[in-house]
Length: 502
Image (cartoon, rainbow, N blue to C red; front, side):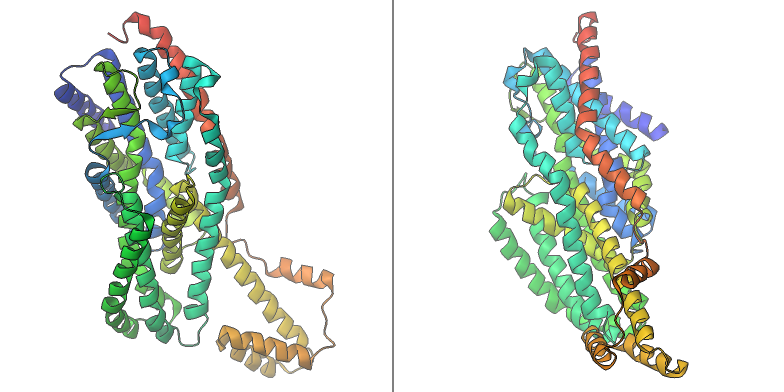
């Protein structure tokens, strides 16, 4: 709390130094912007740090420090230095009656977005920062100028993204995890398989995150087509493969041949990936603070109601430092949710989640879909967990079917067969099952028995209550932020004649 109050003081000091005065509305705007920045850092940290900490690559303190530093760096270096667009064009600001209404709408949106993000963080619900500010702008804009002020056609893609982003993230993360299991975990010699596949996986990560950084993290300072970014990423991935292959080979030779030893090979790539995600997040989501603040400064300086306004230096400082401080002060709450409370993670699973986040953003960029990285990352966690459930349940059913088809055999023979089955590669397992069914055709499980086996060997590796809770929070983000912003606007509009704008 003390650090929060210190940051509030710094925010007001920056506004005073750079803008030369502190009117009541400027004080309110600076406080709203600082509060929103803190809330952004608190809630969105989990996207990048949750898999990193949950996978065991870094401890909570190390993960938060890494994220805070790179979030601030991304906001200050690549967050945009000339102009800011009022977020998403979700309202037609020319319809607002005057500059005072514009200022009050932006202040209301910032306060409502910050309040909702703060509440969601307290309730352990990772939600979209962008959707929070969009809801705030909608609610305050409608309160100021009626329903016609909203660009309703732009809400369709946002609503679609509620469902599409987590689905894509989950499917891609599950695909990567299955690739790792099939090529490494399900092989008889995991260490040799890791020597072969780990450099390929790291090269894929280098490709994906280079393209991700170029397309997303640096887009405000350097525009590059997606095709060129993918080619650049492919070049970096190729270099990474040849550089890292001997290093990975040496690490794999020293690693424990078991699954835990192989998982450790993913730790360094995880740290690099989380760092790049944090940089890109700071560069992008600082606009949710800077956009409304820049519009406020433009209106107060007489620039009028406009979509683009020159960014004062203090705005970027408030955004970057506020996000970093929010990470450090409050980020740990949601890091634990994504890192361990939804499903158990290890380095390989965390690798899949971060890869899915970067890959899904690139795919959405190509399809021009406005996805939320929060929704993608959470969907990826769900995807990893549900795939683990499916694989464990299927394996348990196979073992039980083997036992049923060996009914009447002596226990030692069954044990030897099961030992050979468990050590076999996945393709050999399938062949063994086919051969066993051909040898024992008389053992056919009834539909009811198969259903009983599914129930017997089903394991809940994903916390169902977390799924329902988080999805509910996503759905209510825009309407709740909108209602809060409308109420705040009405209150501020009532207080304006009392000297608020003086």
